[in-house]
Length: 389
Ligand SMILES: O=C(O)CCC(=O)C(=O)O
Image 1 (tube, rainbow, N blue to C red):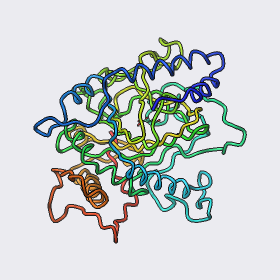
Image 2: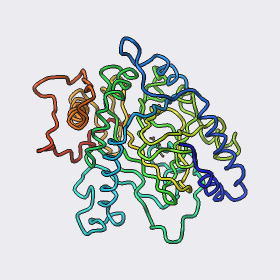
Image 3: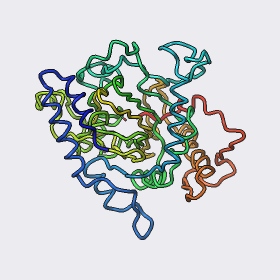
Image 4: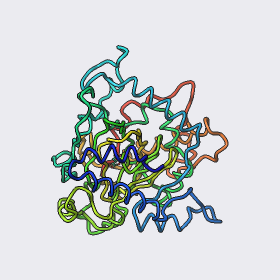
């Protein structure tokens, strides 16, 4: 799904003297992205392994766009849940009720869930938040005078709020890709919704994810894992994530210097993730990536969920979003990993024509979690166990 010209024009118009430069950047980026050859359906070879061409393109560029992963029925489930989530959000930061006066989403949670931002702002850029990884502040266009003071742009721990997201988490083809990239004993990272409504959605400044292993002599292009980014409404040059291909293998990148070299926040060599609804990107967390404020006309919601190599996580102490500062031991990892078979079980009951994925570390024991539609488990605060590295 390319950006509409109307969106490109509307976006560029927010960049003042740089209007034409921004317009050219969006159009050229889109063209470059579509010509890269790292997109297509999830494919397997004759032995049932993820096709080596996919793995080598992912290894080279740090991302791959899997087309047509989620069918219309799954997208309809996701959209219905997203509407419900939107309806249940607190009326403002700190409010306890939603627009209908009901207890708001996440009111009872101990874990961090809702992240708020001023419309079209860049809340992290140039701050010390999240280890100061967002080194520069992106342009913050002006929002309409009737825009709300703040909007929710990220929802953490999304699987506790949406059964549809949980079922997508259990997608067999995606889990087979996770195993091919991170090994059969791959483990979860976290699960997040990124919400970029037109005229409101905040920017996420250029950054690389990962906090623990940058100085590790064994660091390689996959040490900090990857995110799947499932697109519910599509993703364009205007509202989508941009990445600088290949930077996942460059260690910690000086982004301030990249911006200085480019002469603006329009990083040279960056390309946008261009997706139709139902496409899912695998995106290396070490890639330099970010997204501009959504000044276009199309909505983006990304169902974002990540996986790690077990070896990157086990025995590691890290301060995650919940600041626990504890070591991720085998018990912690095993408890958090239970979301995988649970999601597989939930999915198999909704989409019984697909062969369910078998997660080797927790397969077929008495204790393997199973989903019960009549008595669904309480997942509140499952994300206190997220595996931040
Ligand atoms: O979806 C976005 O706009 C940002 C995504 C991102 O930064 C991430 O997944 O780390």
